[in-house]
Length: 377
Image 1 (spheres, rainbow, N blue to C red):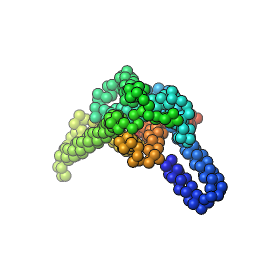
Image 2 (image 1 turned 180 degrees about the vertical axis):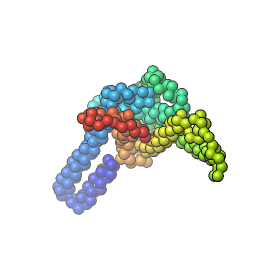
Image 3 (image 1 turned 135 degrees about the horizontal axis):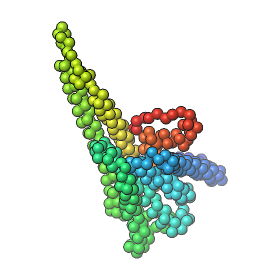
Image 4 (image 1 turned 180 degrees about the horizontal axis):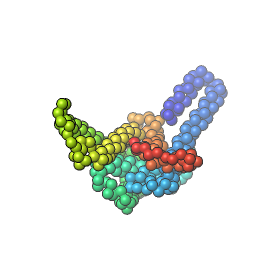
């Protein structure tokens, strides 16, 4: 969107200059149009900040006020919401003036801090997505073991801390020490970007851990869940066919004697068997919805991260001469857009979070109307 607006501005400015060359009206027109573009861009950026902060703050607040949400899998949603919330509360607001003016005026120290936080939070967001996908994978393919570990909060906390440590180690030391190791800085005084921005081999290595490996992992988890559900569906159909054939053989033949059935040998299925089949069917239905949500996760994650990762490597390899700057800007904002999508893509797919949101946003209505259980998606 940024590139589209700026492209329109440049195009219209050129046309205006051709028709009014030599006149003061050209300068006035360009200045007015530039002012409009700045306002539009500022509104769009501030809107994104509000969406990211409000959406993720709602997830965090729901976790605080509703104790029923505090299980292992939901802790990972909380971790994701924290990283995305900080993206909207710190990273984007600091970048907005720099993006609009093209000049960094906050000093080298804050530049380093901003870079560390931005890379840390975006990477942590990715690793949290992988952790959530892995957790969903275990809940479907290792259901019995997974349910036994649901109360082990300590394991969840260890995984959450590991996400932040790994996310920092991927880029943090390079941002802090690259200039010292190289003996010089390539960043102009009025700019703010990482010293390794043009080092393609470092970017390729880091991107392998930040995007390619997580994307393949999430896709693998989704595919494994699909195969598990497909196999269970097939087994369920076979069991139904076997049960039907058994009932057909056990039923009295036309014109023959009626069988005397005792309670322990009834031709109807027992309550226990009915409960088991109903429970299995409900779990299978839930797992299908989990598979669908993970498929959406893979697509959204790929759309938001693949363009930036590939373009960053290409730019570094060709010394930023083969890609227009506005294309890089578009992919850069896609990363932050992902932080605005996550609070709607993940927790809203779970009935427990939806009920907590309803309690926060519509407390009076919730006190009047009893909530109903719904399946998670």
